[in-house]
Each structure stands twice: as C-alpha cells, then as structure tokens.
Image (cartoon, rainbow, N blue to C red; front, side):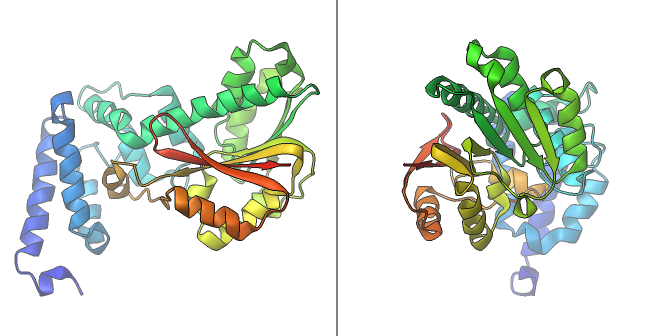
Length: 310
C-alpha cells in the first residue's frame, strides 16, 4: 500500500519535489553554489520512498529534456543502463576520464555528477588500485602475478603499466576476468600495447578455474553487488588463489557515501557496508593462516578488506 493511503499530503509532497527537480532541468542543471541544495532534494525524494513511486519517477525521467533520459549525460547513462546493468565498464570509464557533455544545456549535470561522492570515490579507488599494484611489484623479488576480478574498462591497469617507473613492472603478468564481453573487448583494445603482459577471460568469476599462485587478487567493485552469502563464497574462492604471502584486496562502498540518494534516484543501488560488516564477513569465510585488516581510500567512502596469506 502506498503512503498516500494514510497520508493525504504524500502524493502532493512528492509531486512538489519532482517539480523542484524539474526547475533545475529547465535551467539546464545546477550551478556549483546549488550542489548542496539539489543533493538535499535527492535526499528528500529518497525519504518519500522512491521505490514506491517507480512509475512517477519513470514518467519524470522520460520527459526530462535529456537530463535523465539520454546517454548524453552520465546520470542519464545510469538511468538508461545501455549495457543492461549498473556500474558497467562504460560508465566507470566515463567517471575515470571525467567525461562531460559538450551540450551547454546538459554539461552542468555532468559537473554535478562528477562532484558527487560516488564518482569521486570511484576515481580514488582507481588511484588506490594503481598504488597497490605498484607496492606489490616493489615488494616482490620475482615477477608478480595479479588477478583482476570484474576488471571493467581496464583503465587502472593501463595507467599502472603506462606510468610505472619501476623496471620490474615490465615483467608483471595481469589476468583480467569480466563476464561482460563488451568490457573485455574494450579493455583488450585499450591494453593492446601490453598484450604480452595482460590476459583476459570472459567469464563469471564464479565459474572460473583459478590457479593458486597469484601475488595479488584485486576486485574493485564487484562485491558492492553481492549479498552476504555470495560475498563469503567468493571471498573463500579468491583467497584460495593466493600464493604464500599473497594478498586479496576487495573494495566495498561504505555508509559514508553521502550522495547515495542521487545514485539510487537513477536506480544504481549498492550494498553499502561498514568496517564491522566487512570484518564479520571475513570471519565468516574462516580463511585459515591469514591476516585481515580494513583499509580505505582518502575519501573514506571505499573500504577495502585486505587478506594476506601468512
């Protein structure tokens, strides 16, 4: 039953919030000094239980003059999901590159999108990944083997291999697994100059047969979408792929994602977890002979379980 059945002001209040958002569309998006105001507006929409007003949201998006109903904006790309799922390789690469619409009527929306907490955290996660790869290479005397799970656009790997100043990087081998064939195709093209170092597997990680000699197993964002039982199951599988002293590093968005309401307005929903949640899941995996700690990127929005084989 919708809230309007018990609260006669509910539908009108929700409509007023959409009307306020429509005002931003009429003026071609928010200006920088209005970012906090529009963020608060998305929070109010969330409190009106967006999930119970799906039809109203859909109708609003369809008449939003390109702001939410075309892939010309990043938030529109999120709403439309042209690859059939949220968090696909293309939107992640757009975030990495801070792509902005060239249409003056839409570019403000992209400036707001990139300012919001989740895209900033995604870019910080990429930087974290590159530093992690660098540290892994530097701390090993032998050529390293890295497994990159749900590897997406491959730009983190590309920047690592392109920009590393460590001579040992030239001997690193990176195996990328992604179940989206378009993601694999995109990453292969991007990483063609490093084809002698990077291999690809187009398969669900749950169906992969993994070696057990990886110095690092990395997964940036897959676990954001996994319920606890699958999270633990995959944690066990990936930890078994580590060499002695190898490390498994798993990213997960935390509850400090302050613009979660904006993400979820476009249908992009993650399973947010805090430090205690992640430690409990690691404990449930019961990985023997390993140390466990929680790390984070500078924004504190992405947390990382770090499990090292001893």
